[in-house]
Image (cartoon, rainbow, N blue to C red; front, side):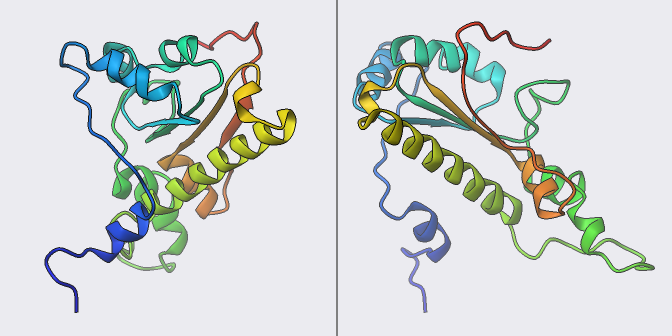
Length: 187
């Protein structure tokens, strides 16, 4: 039986993590973040693009000061398009809009099936993003023998909607790439 202090689900996802909370709205907090990132391999963020720009923690803001850092983004609908600045919710982005609900609901059913548990799509999409981060770390280490000497940065991004597409076998929507120097961002 679990005590009030235990939560197996949170313990599972947070095992081995070291964390700190920094309120980036407080004066001097952004500089503290950059000092912490000097020794980091990965910066993981799940804020919407507009919030990242406002807080000056978007890809360019972080990697211009930490060019060897792996910048990882977990989002609802991805970085581009009309849905980019809308939050992603498990039951909507993954289960309903992603097509998983209709893929598992029997034909002729009067209603689509409910998702089996909360954070169902978040768990799948988060695991895929973690795999992208691990691949970026391994690629950097193999390429240079030491991640601290890798020129440029890697971006790992995966969306809840992409997890739904993968889970329903309709599509794969993950990105892991090294940014070319002359890359332009699509409109």
